[in-house]
Image (cartoon, rainbow, N blue to C red; front, side, top):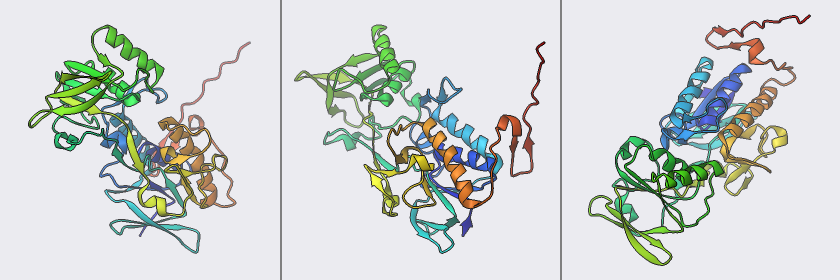
Length: 350
């Protein structure tokens, strides 16, 4: 039996940051994740994708964000159960929970924080009958290593942030980038749309809208696509096709834990620090929903911070905690080390 203070389901960015915030409160954490390594989608799906909305980082690769979060939290010595899926949860007489994985590993904690991101997910695939024949043979639904597309012809389909961001990024990598969307309007950030339009003017991105890919060609690898625009077909030669239509998320076994679910997300009360309808179980990050919810990594960080404050009160009932800024108190590690905050220099003005 693995025992800890906070059991975190999901080792993506929100789950990893929870380790740090809990550590500041002297709380131990253990994380469970079905993936074989920490980082969630940032490690598994797009480690080389640049992220632009992390404070203090004008741009950071998703994989590097994971590495930094692991480095930030390692002083608090979190435990990991990787490659196993949280399957069942049972509440004990003392109020704690026992979570058992699909491989039978048991974990016990007074607080459970579900930080499972989008849950288990599958890419939304275009409705082309033989698309499965070309998967890993020129058709890809995620970009793990952009160097695969170095000096290659690449077609990207989609109208969201991922399609726009990767089209912009690959413009400096591929020999030719074509972005296809079934509408003239894009769903992504306005800044990204403007960058794509600018790259189109410079001849670095081919933009075909409104249109869609309706057929794939090639014997053992993609060699071309049929693109339908205004009822007319044209053959577009390419080496790779990357349809980025998002993910179809599923909560998996967590959906059977008696939690209140709304549109495949766990309902929480954000006035009660993101606690679910079951006291002691919290949901933070993309897995939760509440009025005004934004599915952003930085919002997950905020939710994790407030959740840890509530977890402290559950684990230490009646004990008063005084919030201290790390700039004043420093960071005490569980390994006995201490990172002191710099002494303030005060100048008197006469």
